[in-house]
Image (tube, rainbow, N blue to C red; front, side, top):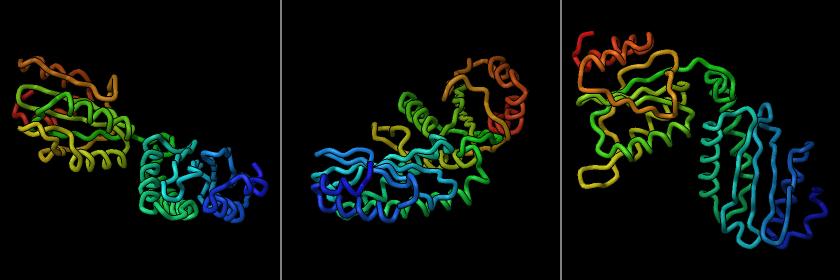
Amino acid sequence: METTGLIHEIHNDDIADEVQALSAILCADQEFQVQSINEKEIVLVIHPHQIKNHLITLTVILDMKSYPVSSPQLSVQSPRLSRAALDIIDTLIKEEAYKLRGQVTILSLIEWLVRYCNLYEEKTIPATESLTGEAEYEYTTIAHLHHIRSKTIYVKTLSQWFRELDLHGVLISYRRWIFLMISGNKNNLQLYLKRHRTQNVDIDSVGRPCKERMLTVLGQVEGRLDAASVLDEVVLDDSSEDWLKYWSSRPSLASIYQKFIQPQTGQKK
């Protein structure tokens, strides 16, 4: 929509001033648009041309009655970025908006988005091409878990994190040992391990949510797991035969077993 003729329809002075400023500053073709407007809200669509490769579309919904006291509703889209990368940007820009609540914020948020995305383009994309939807060789991280008190909560939490970060894995239980193998690109694996150590994933002895303090990373190998779902659960029988049969079922698993698992269990193949 042409913004000049819409200003008189906006009965919130802060929004009217901001729309007018945005239309003057973001004046390249298709860079700023008012998608819709009614008495309750106005929807803005912004394609900041200062972002290299024009990666990002920012959709902003402003409440006609409560903005800027209320934070804008924000949504970030891009045909080049993975869902995990978009989730990260979406979370960060919403945190930025929350810090600025009570102020006229959209131009400040666009400036933040331009800085962040250009830094992302320069540093992250060349090293981690899979975040832009392009192929990259994946890795598998192998970890040992000391114990799981509530398996239902643990598995539900891991599955949610795996979906958010475009990972998949296998949780293996055998006798007193618990191993977790996770596949994905290196950047998302690092994000996952940080989250696993700093956010609640289980419950303690009295039922309170708790963090995982005893996760030990055993190593990392190139290549991805052949997992049937986001998180496969493998519970092996108490017999050594069942245990060794699983690890010898694929060459990649046999290699992981010899390098990382066997030294933990002390079993000989």
